Length: 165
Image (spheres, rainbow, N blue to C red):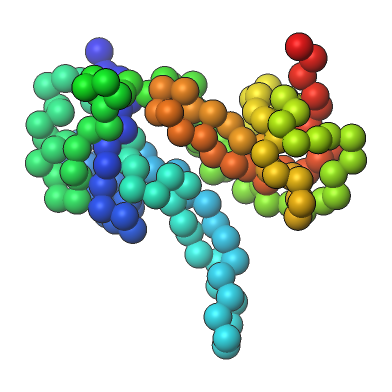
């Protein structure tokens, strides 16, 4: 049975590694977000990795050596010496965040720092997180437990509702 794993890769080589792994007939994924980059003479939309230096692969135990032999891959991410298995639901969350394209700045009303919230509409509906920033917009931090990582997503205030304890 195949599972999702995370691997460390050369920073800024995530797309190349995903492409190489896919050429080896392996399922690979790295989430990206688009941001407006401004230079002195122009503006341009640029894609940045959501989790710099990480690529996710869905493989069987037999394919682990194939992944490690791919140029740009350093190692599997391990916790306490055990390779971290990533839940399908967490990959789905990453894909939803990538597809949603949320990046809206609004004033925060009733919500306050460290409030537990749930997203009430859109592609991320039902995902829970914690408010981690309130100054120039509101960011919801979503914890990916199996990876021991969290992602901050900027969301419009009107789609957030507090979660009662």
